[in-house]
Image (cartoon, rainbow, N blue to C red):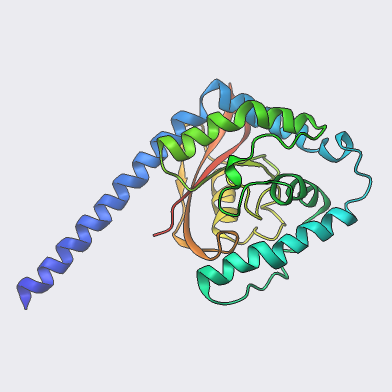
Length: 243
């Protein structure tokens, strides 16, 4: 019996050690990536053009777009959620998105011709915005780092106000705010708050927990700040695959 217990404890220690090493490896990868000139440029361009998106596309009202976005929530998202967890989602909080998030989700989720779970393959919405030009310019590089090179689930670029100005996977957290938006009190919101004030070259790893925009699959987030010289310009966060 004693040997059995010792074997279990040894297995737990090995598992925990591997987890710590994996977190360290992931932290090192995103710290290095966040310092690339292309990533710093992408962070700045997505941040600078985000607020112009509706004006660039002549969107004085998003009422019609909101109908299309919420129809996606009620059908496509809800179907996938039920397939994953076996029950219908409560979308009350999710539907508290603001006008900017509504516009972006219409163009890059609803009008995204890729299937649910493959929205990362969409590069060019062919809209009139400077933000879309930045997406065409930077998306393939960031997606390659995220999926092909590291096997991460998603990557977010977040401005210092807490706005998700870019994500690879384009789930329903895309373009929302992590200070007062629907996902402020999630693991992603927590890692943004923990990361935005740390020093250059540091990283933070959050806890593994269910995450609503990913259909309640477990998610773990790791974040690091992005600097342009000595000037902090945003936060890079990765989402690890569920386990």
